[in-house]
Image (cartoon, rainbow, N blue to C red; front, side):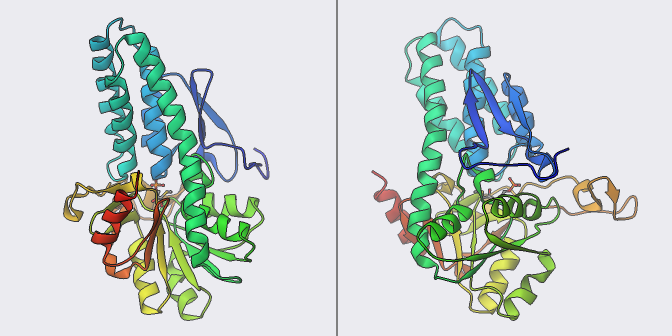
Amino acid sequence: MSDSPKMNSSLRTVEWKNNKVIMIEQTKLPNELIFVEYDDFNQVANAIKTLIVRGAPAIGVSGAFGLGLAVLQSKATTKEELLSDLEHARKILFATRPTAVNLGWGLQKIMEVAQSGDTAEQIRELVISAAKRMADEDIEINKTMGKNGAPLFDDNDTIMTHCNAGALATVAYGTALGVIRATRESGKNVKVIATETRPIQQGSRLTAFELKHDGFDVSLVPDTAVGYSMANGLVDKVVVGADRIVKTGHVFNKIGTYQVATMAKQHGIPFYVAAPLSTIDMETKADDVIIEMRSGSEVTGIGDKKTAPDGINVINPAFDMTPPELITGIITEKGIAKAPFEESIKKLFQSNS
Ligand code: MRU
């Protein structure tokens, strides 16, 4: 095990190389930076389910790459056979995680591209090139989002973030952390407070890791110190990512986001969400969004160490909903939505030419 695994800015969290999918094995971070290589879409589905890859945009692209593997695995010689094999793979990939809308979005985009092909061979080429394009576009979108968000932050701000909405949650650069990176690139000096993000510590394992690696002044706080930090003037602004935003501006993100937003409101601290349009779901109502419930074992222990009595009941929702009245603005690649959100979100899509 290496003491300080090294990332570099050209590293991609998920990548298509030589007809294989390469991913950073995120469950091993921050202790080991290792890559896994897959040639079977079932392996990609398992990687999404077990959080080897996680974060809404990263699982969207992973789903698309999974379909890329599926077209190569299929022995189909006709369009109809190949579409049927692809549909089988889509269902397996889609069933892995229910809350982040980017997964369904990515799969749907690739299925539409596949339908447009005339022959099995053409579909194979179209699917793979569309998935690769989706990965490249993810980085461009994050950089544009960063530029849009940077003016909202001031020189010497301390910015709190929750979970990991960074390079590791996307193909590269990040959404919320992309905004923080772009703020620094615009010449401002910023500090970051990262919440630990129990139960599986995306904040300490991933956000603290990637920001420290990039030379940010980053401090880690336990989730229970959010109120303390805000009440004691340690936080100027908050920016988080999102797994799904519905048209009314309700934001679904990592469990604990609602508490951070409520505290921010209590202390008059601006609370921003950074997410691409692919995270906005204009169809589903807030009440109908499925919150993933994860295994109790994530809460009854840390790593291999048991921290709760045997047989204890556990409630372990992976996400929560932050209502629009707690949100100052939603930063996207098409601009910033503000209240009334229903109207401003609609406008973002109208400008999406
Ligand atoms: O369970 P995870 O680690 O996939 O949850 C990730 C988050 O909640 C992120 O904040 C969200 O996906 C935004 S990522 C750019």
